[in-house]
Length: 292
Image (tube, rainbow, N blue to C red; front, side, top):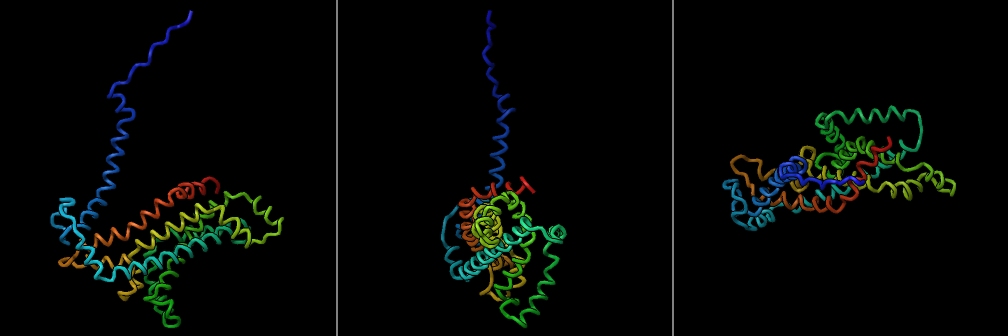
């Protein structure tokens, strides 16, 4: 005698909302919270007036007047400066961090553990503590080598490279440890040197973490304000963040429309680059945590 099976009871709408539905509502609220500032800045970018009066009425008027006003400034010079500094800093950060991480991951030498711990401890201090020392250092260095002193793009890049070495070395070190050492040993048997292994094998196998570090470096350089403000003193040397701040630095003479359209233009390449490289980001950030 076979037992009769009862059909599964259909859950009520209240039960479905309690089990799954509230997650969708929460996700929609989070998306609205995240998108709202972007919608406001885009609306302000294409508004006729350059003030915040009536900013609660989104897209009430659409105009390119702010873009025309922006083109009459040195904005595109600041864009070129920022791109140059960001690209050189990203390349240098990736190469320096990868070389240091490869050394810590593959070689065993005296002081290795102490150096790793020192890098970790140094990163605990906020960078703002070093601003005065950096200013004095660049002032003194500029008297001897002007290209590395104040108001120099190369001087700013050197400061970025020194500050980013520690945290990126740790980030890459965990990822490099996931690459089997047998690959290095097989290459050595075939006659490859350490340099050939590093350039031809390791850098290719660790591409996701290199992309992540390069992307984070570009985002940090483009959005940084304090260091360029301290180091770059003439207007033709400014970056986007320093240049745009001048439009809203005066309380009674702020031009929020020009600031908004400049912010949108500055953020667009970052968003496109982030979307293009997003397939590397998750694997690059998580793979290093599997094996320390």
